[in-house]
Amino acid sequence: MDAPAPDGVVGCETPRLWTPPLRELTPETSAGFTFIDFAEDVLGLTLLPWQRWLAVHLLEMREDERFRFRTALVLIGRQNGKSTFAQVLSLWRMFVDRAPLVLGTAQSLDVAEEVWAGAVEMAEGTPELASEVAGVDMAAGKKTLKTTFGSRYKVQSANRRGGRGLAGDLVLLDELREQRTWDAWGAVTKTTMARPNPQIICLSNAGDDSSVVLNHLRETALATVDGDVTDDSLGIFEWSAPDGCDLDDPEAWAQANPSLGVTISADAIRSALGTDPPHVFRTEVLCQRVRLGVDSPLPLWDERRDVSAKPDPDWPTAFAVDVSWDRSTAWIAAAVRRPDGRFHLEVVAHGQGTEWVCAWLQERLERWSPVAVCVQQTGAPASTLVDELTDTLGTALVRPMSGPDMAKASGMLFDLTTEAAIVHPGQEQLDAAAAVAVVRPIGEAWAFDRKRSTADVAPLVAASQALWAIAGWKEPPKRSAPRRIR
Image (cartoon, rainbow, N blue to C red; front, side, top):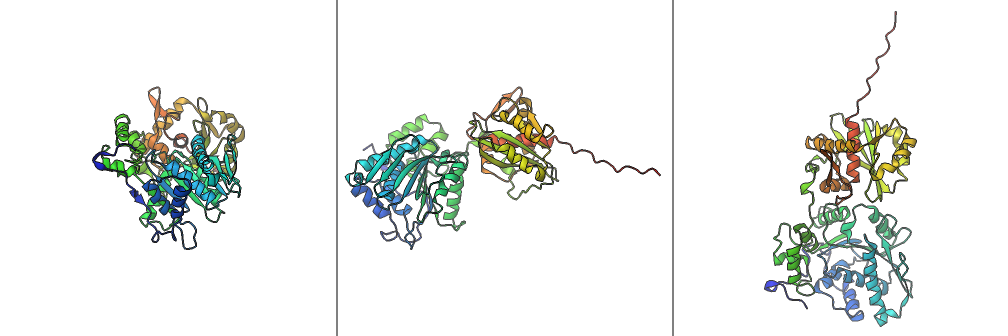
């Protein structure tokens, strides 16, 4: 055992923020007690106090013996044992609950496979379970643990194709903080829709402004705890330090690290404190969300949010297309000139790859009658779309943009945001990009940097391009009726 924390401080068994049970938790109202028996009596593990506590609360049952929590967030500092908990949970659902399918995912497939491999090792190393293991598929991308009674534990990539065509009873989403779009969430979690007793368990430490899925679910779960949302099937169990705490406060360490004094030593945390930048220490060790937007080039972006803003198709509109740095996602943004002179900015579509972009725009030309469709013509991931867009939509509509044009668009977005001349409805991908965007110089000006920004800023780039087009557009003069000659 590592050295105890200073002054006898040990990790907190109970999370700082959590969803209370609907009734007293007993062996009759929580399957967590059988989980503990399985872990300790069958697998021979000694669970940590916080793991026992979590099992009892996470596996709370309703009166019809279904799990209360269809979706649950488990947030905790790094290296506290969440992977071990996930492995035991997977095996318990397979060998005790006889769930047909467990799906393990993570933004990095290597992480999901590491958790899966640990579960396989536990199963094969436990005689009582090994006799019921029918096979282990080790093929890359197809890793599966199979039992003699038909249960499977599969590993899937966390992307928009992950899990499609499957029906999952337990879905494990590891490192949820790394999901910066909703593509993987939409694909993987919907595997549970037709299952009788499913759970989606999200495991992570805290994220930053770019962690759009985690941040949304956390805010929704906390609203449920506060009584602002009535859905009691979403739970949160968060071991984290209080906001604004001192970095060297052992009590704060204990709240984010329930394994402190058992498997994590105070010396290890003290060493991290001495070597990590403050924002890294807060998110990785203290499990606190880090706001990276302090130095954002758009510090007033949040103040321009208006969730009630609705553009009218009759208002002058421009579209713009941009593509993520890794080419994974194409984004289409719209800028609409309002009757009051302000501009409405919004992401109107995004999807994997670029093949869908031209068809999507062509379908909407008649309804929106855009004055322009912008795309950067050189030195950008979207430049490969210029010819296809021009062929499909016509040279009169497509406006290829140069590097200097991009600088003008970025500067215009900054200026009009500062002058309160834009409104936006508040979209997580766009808000995250505005909060953490990094800029690069173009001559004496600057533009948004897709490569170095910590979030995908392509939606913000597209919004600035569309704004540039509509702000510079001049309405054609109305022709007067010809005068009759008498």
